[in-house]
Length: 83
Image (tube, rainbow, N blue to C red; front, top):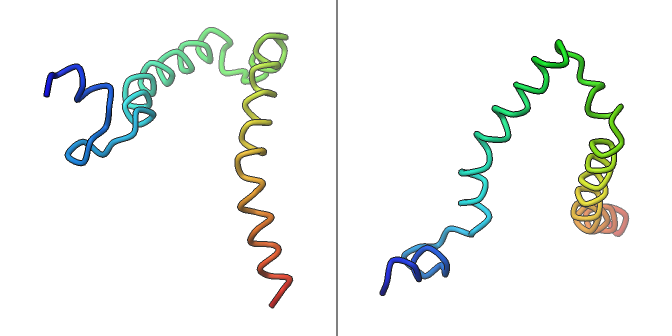
């Protein structure tokens, strides 16, 4: 098996999801840039909402989070109501 295949396609020996790898690479970069933005804004977190592009990206992220969590919440609610 070539090295490229082991990186791109998870196998039994390599069970990690590609999203995990992306998180390990992008996570520290994201944290560093978030800290840098807060330093430039003198600690004011409203800078992320005041800018239209940032506000739109935050809204999209919130919608994706709600849509992904909604089925499990509804299933638990349905289960609690049937008991």
